[in-house]
Amino acid sequence: MFLSNSFIPILKNNPSEAKIKSHQLMLRVGMIKQASAGIYSWLPLGFKVMKKIEDIVRQEQNKIGAQEILMPTIQSSEIWKESGRYDDYGEEMLRITDRQNREMLYGPTNEEQVTEIFRSSIKSYKSLPQLMYHIQWKFRDEIRPRFGIMRGREFYMKDAYSFDVSDEEAFYSYNKFFLSYLRTFKRLSLTAIPMAADTGPIGGNLSHEFVILADTGESKIFTDKRIFDLDNDDTKLEKISLQSMRKKYEQFYAVTDEKFNKEEFEKIVSKENQLITKGIEVGHIFYFGDKYSKPMGASVDLPGGKKDFVKMGSYGIGVSRLVGAIIEAKYDEKNEIMKWPLSVAPYDIAIIPMINKNDTSALDSANNINKQLLKNNIDAIIDDTDENFSSKIKKMNLIGAPYQIIIGKKSEADLLEFKETGEEIQNLPLGKIIEIITKRKNSI
Ligand code: ATP
Ligand code: MG
Image 1 (tube, rainbow, N blue to C red):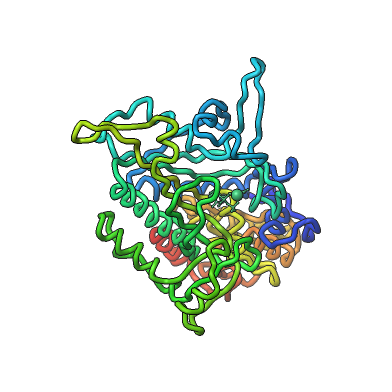
Image 2 (cartoon, helix red, strand yellow; image 1 turned 90 degrees about the horizontal axis):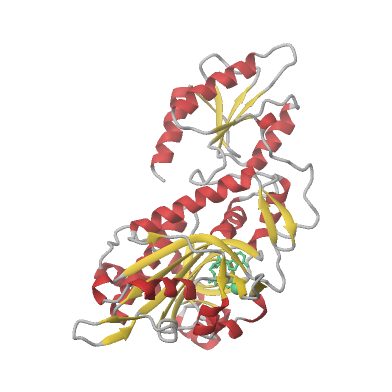
């Protein structure tokens, strides 16, 4: 892709309305454009990143056996009246009336809708468990939308739902999602810690928030540092293995302020392991038993001939918020260098030729290099504009492809000036560069 043909409206300076670095960068390089308060259009660069995040989220859902569906954004108020949440949800719900005067709403979440789908078809324990998810826009009329897409009113979320015959089976489903969340965030190159959380308006009794550390985060967290050293590489998708994996995490104190108890914290966690800081909530999982299935009459036949209400959980990931969360974690704002993790980068590599009016040789070699990269499925952006070299580098540092090739006067025939964005230049042949990137891509 050539920069001159791309719709990447870069601003010279930081926009003054943005208070945190993710919002600054997203406006600065034209990833998003505000449409109205808390509502954004996604421009090519931002959309590309979000779609890559969505793909990773999807792959990790599929790996635990969750099935993708797509529910509508607009829901009928009827099912929300059945669950009792039509009144409870309050002003965050955007309520709409259609031409027949029917009360509709823009879905803030989908427990009711998915329970309605489930109850119309599944009648027996033999069809359980069922894990279903969708990736869809949500709307919550947040009282203070802020920080760009971090707390938007319209936002993109993956929400999954589990249906089981008993508490025990439901915990098994819960633990599958717990693992899939850890794996998802790791592939996004984020360290997200699961923290015991309050269940809020979703209701229920078991819940974890997945939080990444960031000074600009809105969640206050209290934790035992040692939780950061855990890994789950050898966890299998079996009941016992998953159980002990969750136990391993739960042995360490990790809560948000709603659950914080100072006395308990100081008693359980030794001074040197105490960490009090801020974070961004990127995912939230809940187990709530029959909270929705009971009022909505979603029951199944049990082995002995009895019936019981199905046991449900729900599992959210803020796909659009993750774009901002990754920037918060990776953007070096002082030097104005963004380096996207290769797994979600808008481009794998930037090619920066120094172009001279009378001499197209640098651009010609950029074209040739790009052809080779394309053959190897490496997605490059080429700065074919005739700006000066330092402003080219500045721009590309903001766009944040993880690698750069610089084609300057010094370039020799077969050795290229190559670097990881923000690091030192190495002189390497193209074949070696392709090998490095391909190897990294295959390990994601
Ligand atoms: P928060 O405490 O940040 O308001 P929540 O507990 O209301 O989040 P959930 O209902 O659990 O959020 O939604 C699942 C995920 O959706 C959250 O973990 C978060 O990543 C994302 N999310 C929630 N509200 C917003 C929002 N207004 N803008 C962007 N993402 C959001
Ligand atoms: Mg909320």
